[in-house]
Image 1 (cartoon, helix red, strand yellow):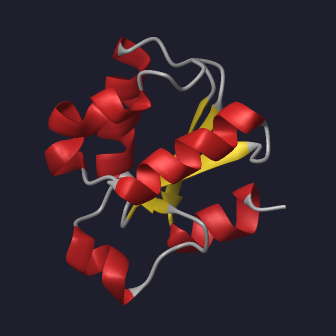
Image 2 (cartoon, helix red, strand yellow):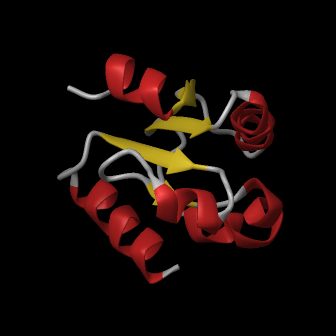
Length: 101
């Protein structure tokens, strides 16, 4: 979770334009993930989301998983917390092709 805190600090300083969150389990993330992504598994999201409370609600957040199902569930959760600039990146390939600049 220290890595998430570092990312949030970068977001607050304006040195990152978006936050990419891989909501798969850690073993999936370890095998392969989008460069620069943070691993915040859907299974832990309700317990760990307090780390994002200081993140501006309009921060661009791209969520992805393996098929788009878990990232969609995570997107609904983030919306319930008031986040407004969310994108379902579907999976690693789709996220890399459509959301990295």
